[in-house]
Length: 262
Length: 337
Image 1 (cartoon, rainbow over the protein chains, first blue to last red):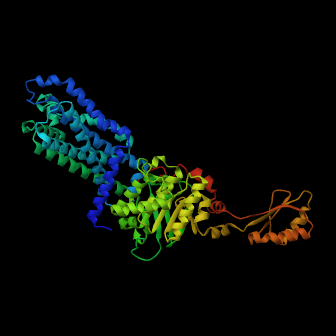
Image 2: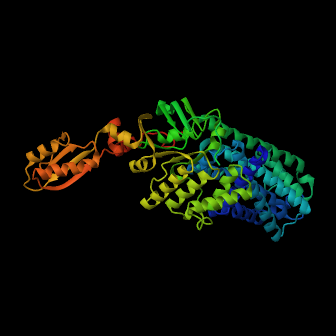
């Protein structure tokens, strides 16, 4: 037997590996997580390119490079949501009971699931950035900027995953989790995912200030374009970490509450 | 090696256990039982009797609303983590992720019990061999048959060499061959010293495996003992004699009455007597009938079954009770856990 912390880290690692490997075996989840964001990117990049000519649009070396942080954000939202769907599926099938009957900390069960989400988000971000690069995106922030942007999106994915897990643990319903899929787009389009915040309508502009993903996507944009005027990376990091920490705590509390109510 | 208990005593001790669900429905109502170390205890009852709720409390998945329960010397509420370290659990329906392979699941289970990579890998290989799934270990569980899933489920419950094993209806839905294979495995585990708490709605399973049987109905234990003890409480075996055509019925009754008390019999060509000695009564009966010159077509000794016991203590047969209660158990219906 091994020490407490090392033991729990093995549990988190094992559950994270499971979460990630099973994700790639569910064909129905691969489409929304790896393909759908690219389709949206293609539509945005080709259909709204003229927006670049607007006076308030910032000077950037490539429009595709400007909008790809929105794709990273969309990937993070979907990775997080699938995490909730997976946990609800485990609850419905009874597999979650197997985990609960093991001598592990309840928090490790949540962290293990979110470790899988983190792994998925990193792979998604690398995939999206690579595809955009192939299709002509310029990343003036260089490799470090790309890594930073991917990192921000991945931390945000943990936050979204934590929220989704909290809902899944509270409800135990896979169909409910699937039904909240459209809210991904609410979060996405109430942040300046594909346009500068100054070009949003006044109402949306005000709403976006309350969406933590606003600061994540702007921070990622600033890193990718190597221009902090487009977004403050540190503010983005703060927003992503706060979201991840708060949502993870919510999920852990939801599990503790479920155990208390049992 | 089994986990050690914090104190000596029964492997499972339950006193006045209660579990009420929303609406005041009591799935478990004042349950008392004790299971000794090294026993196979059969927990028998129809769907809705409270079996699954009891098991879920004992494996720490559900909190009792009254009474107390200790498993491997630990309180299931106050020392739930210690209980979890001591037990192996195979719940109903073998809830196993169909997208994972048998090997992956066993290794993950090993990690959940604190095993390092190499140790978990070795244990997975060992267990796959033990349950006859070595060749299937690399395949996804979704491709397994029901029997293979059950065996894998059992293997997962054994990863950490638990001291007490909970099997909740382990053979429900299995074909006779798979059922026999699982029974053999359970006997083998018990032979190694593992205490087994087995819930079942199959009378044959309880008779085949359990040293002692507890019958639960309406959330309470209504009878408990070895299968033979329970059957003896219901009554003695009965010897049925079918006479050949034209045989003298009154003479046959007189001859057999000397062997044992007559039992009322509806069929005109049949005589029945109490047979306290079971099959040992047959030679004496044959001799008596032969000496009286009575031709016999067939003889049969009928012993009470656990279903008779169930009917005697609950007023209905196990099958009938199962149908009546199928919609009544909140736990079986996935009530809030």
